[in-house]
Every structure is written in C-alpha cells, then in structure tokens.
Image (cartoon, rainbow, N blue to C red):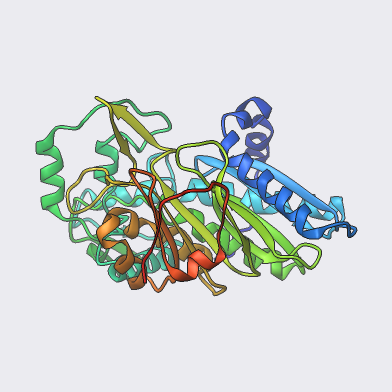
Length: 373
C-alpha cells in the first residue's frame, strides 16, 4: 500500500514540533548523533557526501529521516514526503483517536455486527495475523482492551493497577487475531473482546513503505529512524550506516553496529512507556497469557536482513522475545526466523546470539555477556 497523502495538518504538526519538545527525546536523538559520529570515524579524512536530516514527532515518538548524497532541495522534498506519509499512517492506524482502526474496533465490540472494510487495512491485518500465529500468540495486536485497561492507550498515563478481576476476564475472553473475519467488502469479529492495537507493528510497516519509496526515487543512501526502529537504504559515501542501540538505563548507546543496505534493527524496551508503582516498573508490553506487563527484561534488540518485510519484522520480532523472557527468548526469535538478537535482563546482564555478538561493539567494559547458541 503506497501512501501519498501530504496534508496541511501534517505540515503544521511538523512545524509545531520545536526544539523544546525535541529535547524531551534526547536519548533517541543521541543514538542518531552517535551514529553520525561513528560514521565520521569510518569515513576518515575522505570527503563525505552531503547529508540532510528531517525530524518530526509521529507514532508517539521521535522520527528522523537522513538522506545522503542528494541536493538539499531534493533531500528535503523526499524526507518531507516520507514524514507526511508517516503522519497519515499514524492517524489511520491510531488505536484510540478517531480513524479507520478505531472505527473497526467499534464494530468488533458489537460482534457479530458487520461493516464495510477499508481495503488498505486488509493486507495489514492479515500480515499481523500471520506474525501472531508464528509467534504462538505472544505477538497479539488483538489485546487492545488489556493495553487500554492498563492505561497505555493514552498520550499520558497514571500509575495505577487495574482491577485483577477485569484483567482475568479479558484474558479469559482470549481475543486473537484470527477472530477477525473478512467476507468480501465486509468484516466482523467472532469475539467482541477483540480490540486492535497495532503499536507493535505500525512503525516497522512504515519503515518498509519509506524504504520502498526512497528506492523508487533513486535514493542511494538513507537512514530512517522511528523511535529506535531503523532501516538502512544503501550506504553513505561507500560506508555502511552505523547505528547505536539505546542503553535501557543510561543516556546514550550501550553498543553500536554497522547496518548494511536493506537491514533493519528494532528494539522493544521498558524505558519509554512505563510507570513506577511501589518501586516496581510496569511497561506497555503486555503478556497476553497473564494480562500483566512483561517483567524481568529491560530490552530486546533484533537485526533483520534485507527483505520485503525487514522493517516490519524488526518491529514485531522483538515483542515475543521480550515477553518470553530470559528462559524463552531464544526460542521466540528462532520462531520468527531471526538470528541476530540480544536481550538485556532486569539486572542488566546481556544474552545474545553468536551472530549478534560478532556484530556489536559495546561501549562499556566488564559487561556480563552470555552467548546463547
């Protein structure tokens, strides 16, 4: 689905996102700045191609589009188009603000009521359903009611535990992606408990759309970063893009790696959307088996090779591993077909695959590393 909706609202939203707000996302900015600093080191004394960067706030996070080896005018035009498309996709797939997805959720709640479907949503939902089945249900966008119950379907959220009885009822209702049925131009749900929240899918999907668009425009080098979910297009000045992985408890990067053409990297962490209550951290990643926020993990990072869905898989694949925890993360990433993965547990100890270990340059010494075949 190629998006082509450049709106005045998107432009106003972009202009409104000023330097004061960007400072609130300093950790995410630091990763990008760190990447460029590493890139300068790689390039040595050679003359570097020009780079243009555009930033905005979409999908509830900081977004940056970096384009190399293009004139400033053309790069600005291309980046602006990508950001405008992101804004449209964000509004289309928003889980709680008015839009196509929220209208679908209203119909699901009236099961078995039917309604006409927005055609562009069909492949997205079918794709998310496929990933959910591959993950054994650990990736489950149908549990939007649980996410809402915990207060995470909001731009701001308060520190409170939901009623355990409400959690139990939603878990027992067992909403799943394959409860959603498409019949011709209509759709419905077999289960009224289904409420879609594509927050763990949309950013990766947007990365794939953006990369496809920039390639179609002849761009030879670009880096697209949506809150730490990143995809590389080509390279810069003959060198691979180098990116940092956010430290889950400190400003800046815990490690860096070179991202090859078409590769995508994604991280799920407990450090962006969370609240603290009675000394315990509750993050937005909900375990569909228990109805409670996943515990015992600070972050999971995966790197996905070049492919048609590299961006999407980089966003999706980290969620099942985060939920599976230290005991089950390796099997979870294997099920998703991912070989480059790293998990940081609640104590800050690092578990990683042999393939991932070979690629990472850690910024600290004396880290507790556990290589898991």
